Every structure is written in C-alpha cells, then in structure tokens.
Length: 299
Image (cartoon, rainbow, N blue to C red; front, side, top):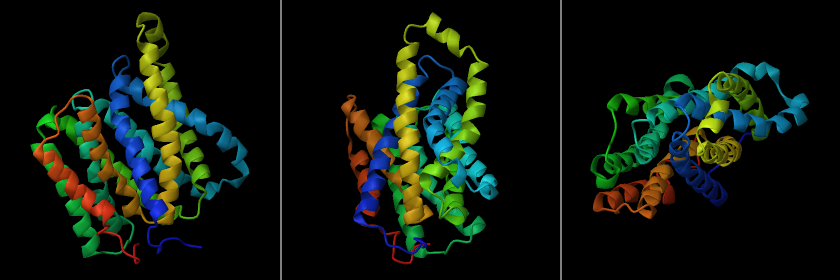
C-alpha cells in the first residue's frame, strides 16, 4: 500500500522533531571530532562506525535485498550520507557548527526544486510558500544572529550548500524509487556501499598513530562514534521510514528544526539569545507547528 497521500500524523511530527534534535547535535560532535582528526578521518570514522553498526542487519536481511535497486541504494548511500559527511567535515574547519546547522536548512528548498525538475513531483504554491517561510527564518538567524554570525569563508559555506543538494537528491530518490523498501534494509545496504570504502580510506591515513601521539584522540573518537550511532545509524532508519510514510518534502523539513537546536545548544554554552534569534525561530516554528506546506494531497 502506498503512503504517498497520507496526511502526517502526530507521530510523524514527533519523529520529525526527534530527528531535528539528533541532527541538531551532530554539528557539535563533528567539531569535537575535528579537534584531533582531519576532515577526511572525521568523515571516514563516522561512516565506518555507522556501517559496522548496520552490518548485522545487512547480513540478517541479505535475502530480502532487491539487488535490482542497487543503483538507487548507491545514490542514497553516496548522496544521503557519504558525500555530505566529507563536505561538512571540511566546511567546519572554517565555519562554526551553529552556522553549519543553519545552512543545512536549505535542504527543503532543494528537495522541492529537485522534486519538480527531476522526480516529477506535484507543483504546489502552498508548499513553496512554506519552504520559503522556513528559509526566511533560517536566513534571519544567519544574517542577524549576533552570536551565530556567518563566521568563516564563503567557499566553505558553499560546501554545505552542496551537501544540502545531495540530501535533496537522496530523499527524492527514496520517495520516488524506494517507497516500499524496509527502512532498515535500505539503510543497511546503503551504508555497506559507502562504509567499506570509508574504512579503507581511514586505514590508509595516520588514524592509528593519532591514538599514540594525542591523548585526546580517544575523546574525539568517542564523540564521532556517538555521532555515528545516534546521528547516523538511528537517525537514518527513522528518516527513511518517515519519508516513506509521508513525503520527501515533509521529511526534509527536519532541517528547519536543526537551526533551533543549534541556537539552544549555543545558548546553553553561554551565547546570548537575541531578538533576531527569536524572530528567526518563530518563522521556522510557524511551519512545524502549523504545517503550511503539508496538505492531505502531498506528493
């Protein structure tokens, strides 16, 4: 049975917020990982640990895998996790974790655009209005948020924009071609495709030597392992299931919640919550509590 025309329920909204919480913390964890590891190592550890977590599920469900969909699994693996992991790790050498979380809110915009252009999804002025409202909120946070100012170089910010385009490609692929796949099976296959190469790359760096030279390496590794298990392993399963039960655009709306978590974490870390933070978050909250872009006829 297709879920593509179901109106999101309370449980779907709860899942959306849980994902926003998990992924809202991920940028801080990446920053902690970069303290001791290079961007390539940081991304490879994240992907490698996540792939190892999925390995038992891959083996257990091996007979259920539809290998005719291999190219779509590969797209989801590369665009949904593989490429963005390296882009974000590199970007955060120059861009703060808070700003990274805010820029990540471009994902619904690209999901909407790519869905119409490449995936034949339905055009909707109502959806576009909601996307732009959320984008406005994120823009206010990044342009006027004194404590979250757009620190870093523009070129590194563009790496995050590229990552959001990858996410948009992945989420549309899941909805368009992998609608009926078991989220656990889909996740397990996708991460074996990208995880094995990531581990090979990692072992060809000075990764092992870092633990002998830097006593804080284990701490950074622990943060990245936490990121891999909670922000990648668990979150990916929840996300794919959410996209299948609602639609690609709704699933991508979790990136509107991420900036809120970034601001909250910044405040807990001593940053001052200013007027424009409130305005920006209000715009974002307006579409998550009152879903302007979601209707019973979602694609």
